[in-house]
Each structure stands twice: as structure tokens, then as C-alpha cells.
Image (cartoon, rainbow, N blue to C red):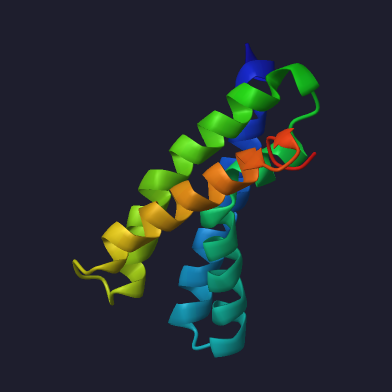
Amino acid sequence: MFTQIRTLVIYSMIFMLLFVLHIVFAANDYHLLFRIIALLITVMTFFSGPICMLIEPSKERYRTIYLQGMLMSIPLSIGLGWAYSDMSVGSEMILFPLITIIVHGTIKQSIIGHTYGLK
């Protein structure tokens, strides 16, 4: 049972750790560390499918994990858009999910076929 959600649990734990760190660094005015963590959160959001592929040990689950990572990135990118809009509704909340879908679609449909994260 756990092996089927192992990758998503690991990804989620890393994301939660970074999220907590960005709050701590912002609250303590560690601007450089906050920006580094915010960049890592952004990369993890837009590339969640490929990152999940790096974590997943089983080649048989690549397709499923990649799709789950892509689906997970959509609500994360909406939240990221909200954060980049200064915690208010803005165009980023629509733009960021489109970007993540394009990124995942581009990686999946590379010129060499279905790469599922280039792994």
C-alpha cells in the first residue's frame, strides 16, 4: 500500500518543509534565504511530475507518478499564483496552472516520445 503513494508522500514532505522554512525565514527577515526557498518552491511546483520521477524507483509506475505529479502541480500553481499576486486574486492564478500544464506536456511529449520526466 505505502509503495503506491511513497513518491507522493516524499514529495509532499519536502514541499511542506520548504513551505514552513519560507514562513520562518520571512518572519525573521532572512531575505536571501526566503528568496532561495521561494525559488525552490516555485521549481517544485512547476516541475512536480519530473521531480516525482526522480524520486520513484519503479519504472513501471513512471506514467502513473508523472500524471499524479502533474495533477498535484495544478492546485499548487494556483496557490503559488495567489502568493505571487501579494495574497490576492490575480492573473497569476490563471497563468501559473497553464504554465505547469505546458511544462508537463512538453516534457512528456518530447521528440523522442513519452519520456515521463526524461528519466
